[in-house]
Length: 89
Image (tube, rainbow, N blue to C red):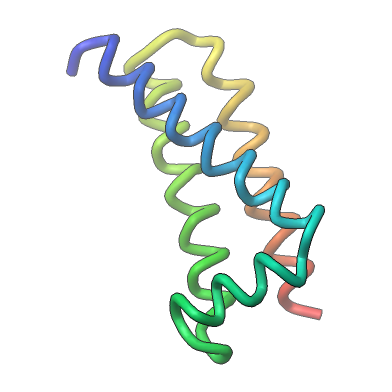
């Protein structure tokens, strides 16, 4: 895999992570959007699936791309942990 593609995966992972954190700023609007997308009972699947996808893409970028993506991997794992904890309460 080319380093450029790995860096693209890392960038996509960080965009997904930022999207999840920005959704906390206007939770009502984000909730309505996810409810419309997947239904009220499946919103946790969308949120956790997005966080898990960000972790996987950041992992690929950290292995195949520059080692600075390890920091992005840590941020993605932290985001997954935070949202898992927040949605399990």
